[in-house]
Amino acid sequence: MSCLRSIVFRLLVFVVSLFFVTHFTIEVVIKAEPLGLIENINLDLPPVYLRVNYGHDWVEGFYEAGHTVSITVTESDGVTTKATAKVFTGPQETFGGQTGFQSSLDDWSPRPPDIQPYDWVFAQADNGKIAKVQLGDIQGEVRFDLDNITGRIDAAWIPTPVQVECLDWGTGKPYNDRDGGATLTNGFDSYDCSWEGEWDVQPWQDIGVGYSTPDGHWVANSFRDERWMAMWTYEPPVGFLQDGVYRYHFRWEYSMPNKDSKILDPMSLEVSNIYNGEEPPVYDGYVLIQPWASEPQLAWTGSGCDSVLVVHPDQPMRFVWGWVNDFSMTYEEALSHFSSFKVQVFWEGDASGSARLVMRDLVQFTNSNARWEYRCTLTEHP
Image 1 (cartoon, rainbow, N blue to C red):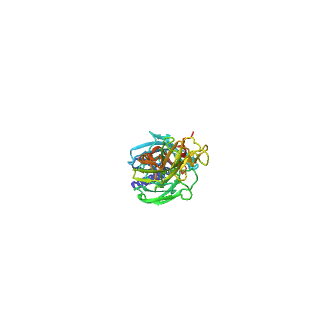
Image 2 (image 1 turned 120 degrees about the vertical axis):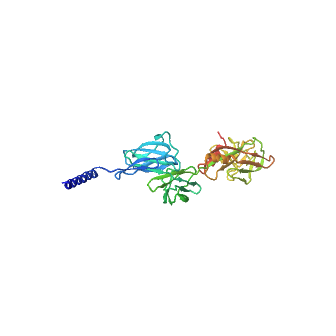
Image 3 (image 1 turned 90 degrees about the vertical axis):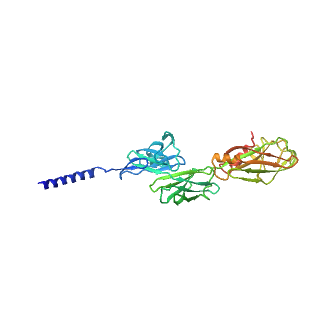
């Protein structure tokens, strides 16, 4: 009798177990270090893949519509919270209509985070799926004169090469993105992307560089060639140069971030009351006396800034010299560099002498025409 009871009990346990296996989903609970989130692993639910661009401080991801996703950005320790956000999944215009989520400035609490290399980004959907990614240090240098970008990636925790891509974020035109190749994230291997012959990269145009992690996430940074321009000027007293041809030249030197100096080739300036049997006009504003052989003297002639061959003695004049930094700099670096300049002009003839020029505003150098456009404003025509 006891043997029969044992058989019946075992059959009952088997039937109950089979019922639970066929009617309920088994959930395995694990801790997601380092933040300590709880992840429900359910093979029936799609994974969350993160896309983080810390150059512009946004987080996004592709996911099915109809979910709330909680995002947390932490310091590199994975614990100290910088900011949190709640976003909703749905069709996204920048995804070409595909569904997902995107953070905006207003989503963050207590304020939008300044996302930095080595930070962690966590996301948890309302169905329990989570994602996490630590951000590698993507370094890059844009050379607008070479139409390329080169750099390295430091993410020592990734053991295998990552695929790098370079993205035109500066023009809004459909230039092809560039394949930066498979690169080790050891901080030494380099990537290289070039648009030579296709895209004439200009200063201040953004270029994105991103890589895909082995877990399917995407991390990116943004770069641009930040060039600055300044002009130095000196205004001699009106009438200090009378009829004659004067030779003049500029000398410049700077001490930051290193030292350099140069004496430019001499130029000629003709001052006269008569030219080709007529009296030269006195132009509105200043005539610019410049170091550039193609346009040694520049004046506002009524419809534009044009070269002039002869300057009237009563014409207000302004000696002008300009500089664009040789490589990308922040505003603070450029200000230190430009402030270390000493620019002088020397002239020969009956009124021989010299003067030191004074630096004017430090402005962005945006394209090859920027210097000319800015010079024209220095005539200060009405």
